[in-house]
Image 1 (tube, rainbow, N blue to C red):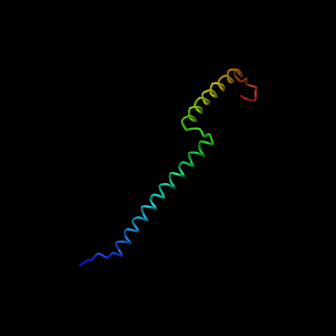
Image 2 (cartoon, rainbow, N blue to C red):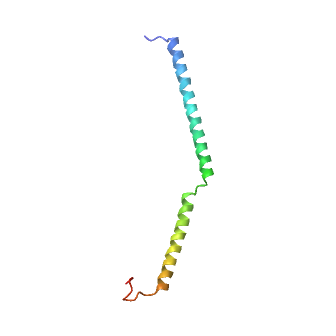
Image 3 (cartoon, rainbow, N blue to C red):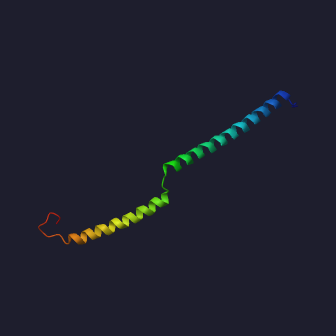
Length: 84
């Protein structure tokens, strides 16, 4: 037969409230760290990945165009030149 012990009941209540308090403190700390990280990222003026990829694609297309233009300006390499 089990009896209810007021000491254990009270200890369980204290532990439950301590755990909920710790969980709330953890959530608050996580929110504060996330806000601090967002603030730091905004101060660093970082570029988003999709913007970087778009600029990179545009520049690689421009580089390819310039290389083709340089190749046409140089003309065909003569047999005696060092490029041949």
